[in-house]
Image (tube, rainbow, N blue to C red):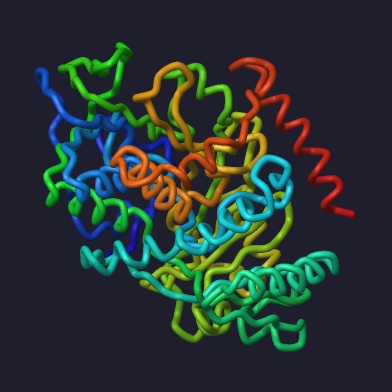
Length: 441
């Protein structure tokens, strides 16, 4: 790839192309799909062309159902094509608090499904020969002594559950084997998690879906949904009639379905990518080429790309306001971790929206009063693997094989964020300030 000029999310109209991220610049295929024109019928209509929608389409097509997928912009345009590329085990946060609803066995099943979520990605990449720079190895990093205690508890819990991949705790003295920074107190290495190029994964999955007969339509924003025994989904250019509808829009649902929109809060997350780095410097920063993440509320996450750039992300914003200059905002955070990168150019900068739920558990269920309308959303920063699990559960439920695992998620109630569309973000930003202040102690 030729040396690129710095880019920001705002510089390219979203209706023309993918957001100008490092991923878009290094995409290995130019998959283009037509806009919906005219009317059509199908077994299942899916709204949303990110990981949830694409993988639900694959799951259903593999089960013999006909599928139409509608994407308002481009396939992978949202968080699926912009995220940090970290493929990490687990779904949700603090799952033990759901024991009063699901029982101990139900919670343990959720935890094991968090292992399966990564395996689904692994298997999908292998089955459809998707070139997306999949690399194994991940490390959680501690900045406080309580984080180290948490690692001990997590290690013991993963062993109890029979986690099949290598785990090891890393002391501060040996942490230089994982990360070239003095900022951290220790780590927990997981060789069953890793990192990849998320947009190339999404484009590869779209190609896989299309090879299975899924009809993919881009630039086809849904304007109206008519509910009933047959669902009619209207765009500016046509209409899809389907037996079943799946809403897979996550943070980009907007006003399409108010009953769901209030339960997921869009929050901004931001990433910068350096110029290409010398191999020796890469080996100094991340000697084992692992993805890493710290444990703070306003966390940092970072990894190396296949062409030796450092991708550094974090700074989740609930205020609804993006930084005016993402690089100026993020680069000092990167230099706090890696002061050896002073003078290194930032060649890409971008942001996007992740979907946050009040209880941080993915929301997977049926729309109340509409038994043929399904949804999955609110992955709270763990969407790369959790979307694939959600798609598997949707496939099991809609395909008729089983609904037990789907029902386990559907049992958990999800609160609507207070304040309405205008006040939700400011209220949550105020609440998160408390957690950040507590985190600093």
